[in-house]
Image 1: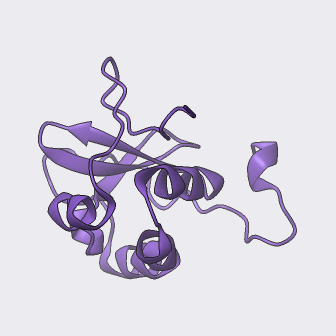
Image 2: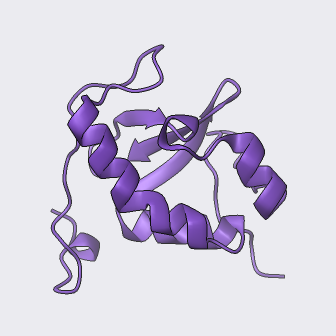
Amino acid sequence: MSERFNRPDRPLPNLWTEFSRGRDESALDCETAVSLACHLSPTFKNAGDWSNLVRELADQGFGLVFQGERLILVNEETGIDLCTCAFLGHSFASLTERLGKPCVEATTARLMPRPHA
């Protein structure tokens, strides 16, 4: 397990699922989906900008990446794409309305914190 996740003030990471979402909104069973949504809801709701959201999710072992027009939550420990952000109740449209335009790495479609100016 990565050292960045082994912190006494945080629960141990959960692998959530061993299945990528494929063409579906999620590969999670109902109970796991609710648990993940509850676990990440404060992170999404309290983010003041995209950089903050990306950093906070990374601290919890997650990343965001575009697949086509969908914003996907990825488990960084396994590389598995878990679900769309809309599936968790945070659509890309609602996030951009609140947070503005994200910074996206062109070659990977991965969201990243804005470089410091």
